[in-house]
Length: 148
Image (cartoon, rainbow, N blue to C red):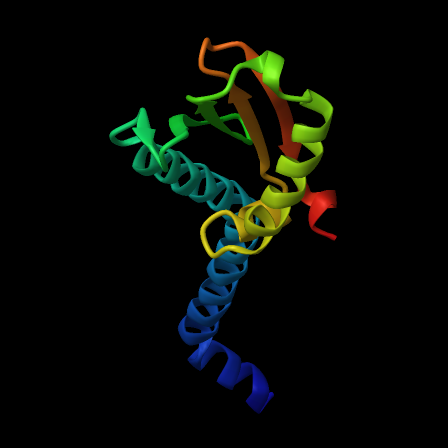
């Protein structure tokens, strides 16, 4: 009988403890459901901000013959457009250019601090190169599987 007496005596404390544990468990379940969505939104904000930062002042000359035209982000794809200002499409072998440009962009896209972690986690980077008359020379994508 003494345990019943103790149970009555500490009933308020027991109810409080059970309530706190229940609320804690419910918060953990709620957070487990909400956290992935918050992480996705944070990733989208970072990528949108990065694209806006690099797009500031475009078009801008990177050297005497290459102009960065724009950097845009939407729906998991970063689109980076360049113009070769001193070259015509007829002067360039598009297949060879694509092969070389792709080879040169994989390493920085996958390993640099800015884009690297995003590309390795699923970001697609679309590179587009136009000639001086705005004709398409090459367009290709760097994706997660290119980084392996």
